[in-house]
Image 1 (cartoon, rainbow, N blue to C red):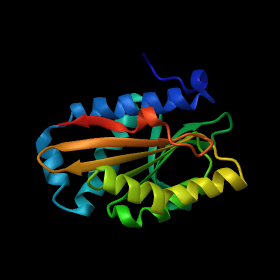
Image 2: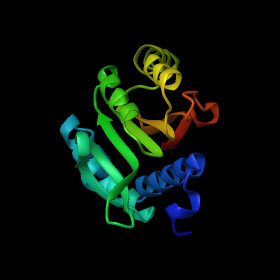
Image 3: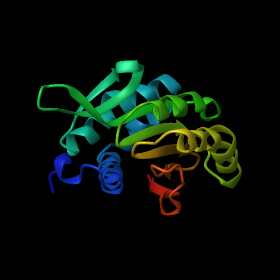
Length: 189
């Protein structure tokens, strides 16, 4: 099925599902040796995300991709609107240090797009999840939900490499509530 944003406009759940499926498909199409190279350093991982993996995801979604669009957002999936404005559909930030990710999290809350995605690298277990969701992200999303409106979904993709490379998801809805069914292992390679 070809992605057509006009059909799902305003359906944040379907946008998130389409992004997630396109990401998994792109990960599965990538040779593991490329991941091994990317995981050698923070800068290599960031380059891999924004020069290779995310452009493939955008292409699968029939969207265009640009790095560091306005306000120095790391990446943007966008459509060209009727008068050629680049309208962001998905805004992406990547932070290699999970415990400083609250800066990127806050930045994404400030911006308007139906889906905002933060990609981090960290072990994802009950302890780290509790620390990050309560001490680094929770108060920010709660404040935004309470004081002004949130647009769309806010998804965190957590990359963890121990014996295998695993990507987990944790997602907030447009009311700042975590979506329990989206707190899970996305893919293991």
